[in-house]
Amino acid sequence: MKAPGGFGVPAHSVTTRNLGAAYPLLAEAGLGRRGVLVGHDLLGGSFVFDPFELYRAGAVSNPNMIVFGQIGRGKSALLKTYLWRQSVFGRRAWVVDPKGEYSRLAALWGVRPVALRPGGSVRLNPLDPLRHGPPSGAGSAGEDPDRRQGELLASLASACLGRPLAPRERAAVELGLGTVRAGAGVPTVPAVVAALLDPSGEQAAKIRTDRASLLEDGRDVALELRRLVHGDLRGMFDGETTPGLDLSGPLVVLDLSALYSSAALGVLMACATAWLQAAVSRSGSGQAFLVVDEAWAILANLGVARWLQASWKLSRAHGVANVAALHRLSDLAAVGSAGSEQVGLAEGLLSDSETLVIYAQPPGEVAKAAEVLSLSSTEAELVPQLRRGVALWKVGRRSFLVRHVVGSGERRLVDTDAAMVDR
Ligand SMILES: Nc1ncnc2c1ncn2[C@@H]1O[C@H](COP(=O)(O)OP(=O)(O)O)[C@@H](O)[C@H]1O
Ligand SMILES: [Mg+2]
Image: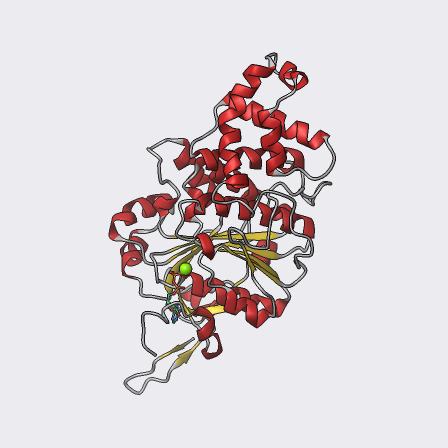
C-alpha cells in the first residue's frame, strides 16, 4: 500500500502484510490471494474470498455463507458474479432462483434453467433418494439418508400445514414413509399420501394403536400433502423426477418465478431445495456452491428451517458451500420471542455460516443485528449507511468493508433495474 506523500516527504511504500503488523487495529492484511476477486477492501487493497481455501487454511470452520441486505443493495449481483468468477476454477453451482433472474448467468454458462411451473413439463421428486454410504467426515446422526428423508418429509408436511407437526402426526408420517419404502420403486409424495390415507393394521401395531386411530393421526397431514398432488402445486412434485434432466452441467438453475408471488412460494422453495440437495449429494461433485436466493421464503416455517439447518451442517461432508440470501436478520427469527426455538434456530444457522455478508440494514434492525452478529459499535453505526454494492463481511472472526466491483462484461448479468431505469 502507498501512503500519499506531502510537504516534500517521499511517499512511503509498504506491503499490506507489513502495514497490518505496523497498524494492527487499522489495517487488515486481507484473506490472502487464493480465491476469487470480489472487489475493493475499503481500507486498502483488493478483497479476495474463497470459502474452500479458507477452510483448508483453518480460517473458517465451515464454508457456508449468509448474505443479508435490503432489496436492491446488490445481494444477487454479488452471488451471480461470484459464481461466474468461480467457474474459472471449475467450481459448480446449484441455484434456487425464485425470481427467475439467473437466466443470463445460465446462458453465459451455456445451460438452460430448469423452469418449474404448474402444468409445465418438469417434475421433481423431493423424496429422491439421498446418497448412501458414509460421506467423508461422517458420524453425525443427521447423515443417515433414510432418517434425513424422514425429516425432510416431516418438514414438507409442516410447511404445507403451516405449523409444526404434533407427535402423533410425525409418527404417522414416519410409518407412512416406511410403508412406501418397503414397496417397489422410489418413494413419491402421492405414494405417501396413499399410505397415510390407508394405513395397515401392521403399521398401527408398531405404535400400539389401531388402524382407525392411525388414519386419524395422519389425516390432516395427508390432506395438506395432497395439495402437492391435486392442489395449486400439482404436476411439479407429485411423481418421479422427469427423466433426462441434465444435471451434469457446471450450473443447475431451478427457476421458480412462475409462482414467485403465490402464497405457495415457501412450500415450492422447500420442495425445490430438498430436491436440489439430494441431487447435489448424489452427484458427489465436491466443492460446489448451493445458492438459495430469497431464502426468507423458506425460513419463515420452523419445520423447514430446522431441516435446512441440518443440511447446512452436512456441508463439509459433501464439500458444498451453502449460500442463502435474506433481507433482514429478523427473517431468521420471524416468529420468535426471546429464548424460543425459532431464535435458537436462527442463531444455529448463523453459527453454521462462518461468512456473513451484511449489506445495509434498516436502522430498526441494527441493535438486534449488532447483538446476534457480534458487531462492534463502529460496525453497527456503519451498517444502516452502507451504499449499494458495499457490505460488511464477517469472515470467521475478522471483518472487512468491501465494495463489490462489477466488471463491464458482467453488467448485463446483474442488471435487475432495467425496468426501472431508462438506459
Ligand atoms: N456492486 C455493484 N455495482 C454496480 N451496480 C450494482 C452493484 N450491485 C448491484 N448493482 C445493481 O443494483 C441493482 C440491484 O441489485 P440486486 O443484486 O438485484 O439487489 P438485491 O439482490 O440485493 O435485491 C441491479 O440492477 C445491479 O445491477
Ligand atoms: Mg436479489
